[in-house]
Length: 297
Image 1: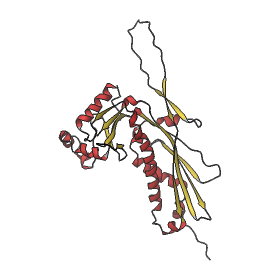
Image 2: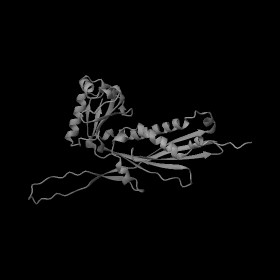
Image 3: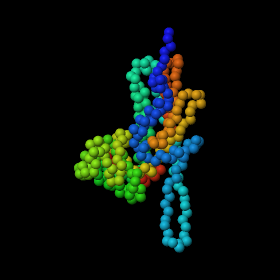
Image 4: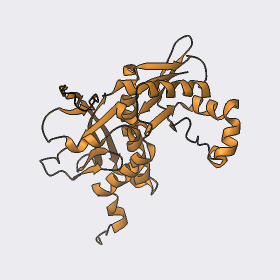
């Protein structure tokens, strides 16, 4: 029997680095809240320990020149515990692989990325309970007036004017597009974005939509949209080590998305299947809750 030669294209489908890059590309496209919040603490995380301590900006007072008074400087820190260890296990049988469409790599990596995205985003959205205040009314739609209220509360909290975000559910994103009080502004400011289904900046907020905005069942249901400055929440990830048994793996630390994950792959000769696992270790915390608001609807 002649030796069967596997083409490079077919073999590439089982190189971990290629899978990892595909997953990374899709993660970047799917994340919303994880892209908004503070993530650059990940570079400060040591290789040991289960938490990272983040220094919270201090408040100082100005004195008249000549005043001999001093003020004590006390550094306040908030801890982010790395206690979220999630993975997406995938088993691909040889029979299924032989019968599968040629774009199986694209399908599987897309599904893995969505699963990781939902895990991270859901944990971040769960921090809505730490918000320092709220605007809006349960069971109603978000309006321009509600957003102005959120702006005022963040102004009162001395939140920086830049890096403010409004994250809305699909329902409230659509409702805001149809707000009659904003119709003239939308028509004059940037009508092309509305035609594309995107909301422009409003009252100093960059607007985003996420299907993972929490909705709590009740009478009526309460949708917990978020208005925040990026310093309100933190996401910290840690690169995981390669397996010690030589299992093919790749560890990806992505500076653009702030995410770090590991992918491992092996083949069961007797079971005739590939096993792929994508895992991530991370922690989330509300480090400045005074910069986080619930926008109820």
